[in-house]
Image (cartoon, rainbow, N blue to C red):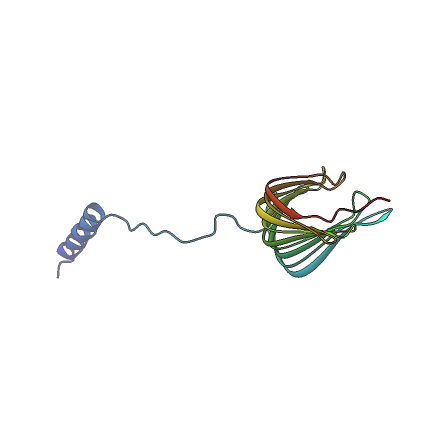
Length: 172
């Protein structure tokens, strides 16, 4: 029995598969960025010689090369002599700059509170910006508007489309 015709036929079949069929291109649905670290239910404290400067709590966090993405973020900042507490469903922390989304709330020591759906907070300059509609409360006063610019150090506010209820104190 001669095996040469068998191997010759097998070679022709394999060569025709190589020539006539294109390789199948399969895309795997992989995330664009892979987290370096993932944490569940965590607390992070930044401590200086004067005490706790920043406290960061969350349900879940993912650390990427230059940022942290935190679910159910609760951040307390005491770096400028007063206490600010920021809460949101999701936050992205990147080198002193925090972007907050979904049910954002900022509470201060002076009793003021504001609520919005999206805000950014710059820790270095103590400026909070609400992107879109917001409600601001300070004692019995209520202010509604859009595009809030709030300097936490000076307490000055700027906004568009402002409507408010403000209690004027009488002087005697």
